[in-house]
Amino acid sequence: MKNFKEKLSLVPTKPGSYQMKNKDGVIIYVGKAKNLQRRLRSYFTRTLTGKTKMLVEDIDDFEYIVTSSELESLILEITLIKKYDPKYNILLRDDKSYPYIELTNDKYPTLKIVRNVKRKHNKNHLYGPYPNVHAARKTVNIINRIYPLRKCNTLKKELCLYYHINECLGYCCKKIEQSVIDEMKKEIISFLKGDCEIISKKIEKEMQLASDNMNYERALELKNMLDDINTTLKKQKIDLNKNYNFDLINYYYENNYLSIEIFFIRQGLLFGRHNEIVSSMGELDSEVIEYLVKFYDKGILPNELLIPEDLDENIIKEYFDIKVSKPKRGKLKSLMELARENAQEQMDIERETLKRNANEKQKALDELKSLLKIDSLHRMESFDNSHLFGTFYVGGMVVFDDFEPNKNLYRKYKISTEIKDDIGAMKEVLYRRYFKTIMNEMYKPDLIVMDGGELQVNAAKEILKSLNLEIPIIGLVKDNNHRTNYIINDKLERLSVEKDSKLFLFLTKIQEEVHRYAITYHRNIKAKGALSSILDVVPGIGDKRKKTLLKHFGSLRNMKNATLEELTNVVGEQPAKKLFDYLKQM
Image (cartoon, rainbow, N blue to C red; front, side):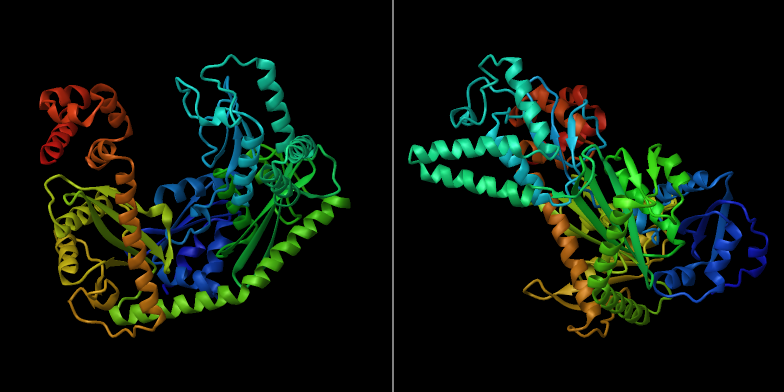
């Protein structure tokens, strides 16, 4: 660990954002502080454990930017994290998001589950979030069975099956009174806000009718539907005013782990809850606020946030521009304490698992560092490729931080038409990935994990040498049954790793994940059909150009019969040349 005593003495006591760098000058952590000097000193003057200890051991230098307020430092911190994606900033890189139920505001409305709630929804009605995805799907299914909403994405020219089974009013061919649609929407909205009475009575009436007609199968189906509403879908009632709509946040901290609990209160009902346990590396209040920024970046803000006493309500209020309160007494104070109890309970449940997993991963990392004779090992990247129709190659890259997948950094690659073999495809993917490292000053991994033996390791070495980069490489060699057999380093020497060791297990999981990722990309393309498949793997052809081609030519045959000039007129010279070459090989 370097001695920063002199440099720390020059750091001001003002608010700001700080950036930690490793020996390569790459930013590995971004933080914020009310008092920059006090915060930075804390890294180098106190006893550290876990990931904070790993971070400090990696620090070779630090920089800071002074801001005029803590809010400015928070905004700057978030901006820098998104720009540099530092490997130790786990809190703001989580990819978890919850589904919402959307009732569209179209002329003929539909009801569906959506996740990307940041896109434009044209004033549609959104309800959620639903932490229980199964419950959300059941809710949508029940409503669509009871109410004959539009089921198709685009109106057909003739009546479909949904009309004949009374689950659609036949909007494509029938004239439907607006009052009928408005009444349906009114009842659905009432149900989604927590009032089950109207829908329950509808089901009971239909169930009685089915029973009277001796249609017992239908009656049982309706009874099961009613049971779902009364159990899975019925929200947990709490004794609050029905007009209450807010999210309530509390947390529990223990041994470098932070358990964050969020209660979703809608119409006075406990609509759902979210809990997550994350590694803690900074000041608690700052980390909770940073977590909320990340969490609501993927979802919809409530009307109000309720927070515990020790969080800064002003900075949260300023950042989100919503009402923020701290319950002092009564039912809301009790609910705040309940959230903390839940956070602690989740921590108690996970404590031993977290501790065991952290220890196992740290031992495996230390063993691998020792084998490779390297000082720092945190981020690993692994590559694999798959082909389409025996010739058209696609590639995949997965990223692991401390043997944990970082799915935000996964990447897919379309491979050039000239590539006809696995090694050629691998070289192209590696070159494109690490050329960006040089040109865009991106991070580089601490280790490259190749899915293969000598050929793959030599291919990686060749590409790194051409780019004047030095990154350790290992190869995971498979046996005849496609199972990981042994491990080699970049000198093609066999590493002494026991097959029943945690290190071998963790590396095998990386190999399995990159294979799954590449082959899933390949299968997803195939599943779209032959024409879409070809367009999806042609470099330079994105969604916009694909739609233009499909609209202009209409079929694969017409596209194959087109001249290069005709293709150029539609998508431009370079994409047209690549598409022309692909089509001629079919």
